[in-house]
Image (cartoon, rainbow, N blue to C red; front, top):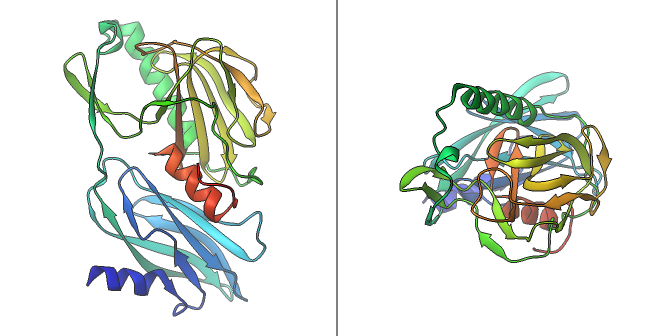
Length: 290
């Protein structure tokens, strides 16, 4: 019954505008895409899910089509999720209730041995640093830029094999410490790392856990992150193009060896970066499946 309900609510024009939920059955830690067809007198605003608002923005490559990327946390439980599409129609504020199904992702577990000082640091100065860096990062990720830098499909930041996928439960030195928040690529120290797409550098800094870190703002709340780097070739506030070299890979921060950790956030929510960019490439930016 749920599948029929979702189908009915995912492609419809009952509410004064046409819309489609591209992937109405999505896993935790993944991103859903909703497309809207522009209608006379309708101004699209946001998709509200709980306390989060995800912007509805015009497709940069298709005039008259609007999109929203709705991110679900790794910690979200399976449920039928209520999404409120907020818009104005002929000057009046309105909202429409949409539904999609969130299921549990089939994530694996991995055990990792690292320097004990990186697992549960005791020094007050280190704890203050970690707290300061976390607050700084969340302030960045929760900012939704009105500009959209994206005009082309995403590319991978490095052509290499994947050594650890997004979502694996992480057991550090015998203690469960959360999950793997990105995708790891094999990369010897000194390998050039490319920008996955156009954007603005909002962070280029050495950090306690992520080591040498570059964060790109692609606009509309979309961010990609590049961790454990050994060298930066960009500075904060620089505008970069897809394929530009951000710096070199390394083994800084909490690591077991040299690699690139590549991750993504949407309006502060950590999501599977490869699923996100494949979703965008195939449905908004019209590129190839990675």
